Length: 140
Image (cartoon, rainbow, N blue to C red; front, side, top):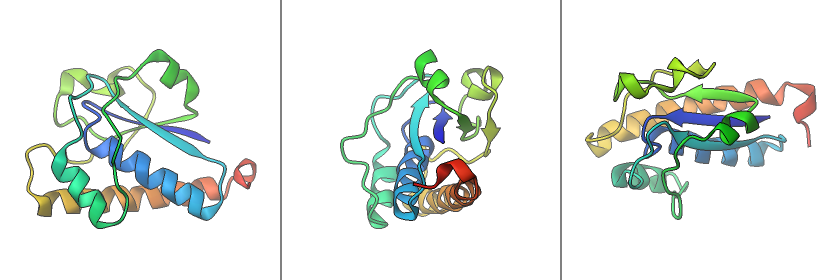
C-alpha cells in the first residue's frame, strides 16, 4: 500500500506521519510505504516538530517540505489529509478524495503541544498500519 500524507505546508504533521508510518511498516514487515507533501509547501521543517520527533528516536534529518504534485497523487493508493485548520483555502480535501484526520497544526505551538500532536499522529498511524497489516497483499 502506498500512502500519501498531505497537509498545507508539509512542515509538521504530514512529515511526522510519513516518518512514523515508514518506521512502523518496516518494523512490522508490511509492504507499505508513505510519502508526504503540502498543497503550498513550506520553507523548512518546523524545528519544534523535529525536536519532538528526535525525542522518540524518529529523526527528520534531511527531510524538506515538498509541494504536492499530480504524480504523487497518482502514486498513492491511499491519501490522508492531516487537517485544514491552518489554511482552509489550501485544504487538500477540497480536491483530493482523502481520509481526513483533522489534526491541530503544530506551527507556532509549544513543545508540549507538539508532543501531544505527535502522539496523536503516532496513534493514528499505528491504527492505519494495523488495518493495512490485515490486508492479504501487504505481507512481505
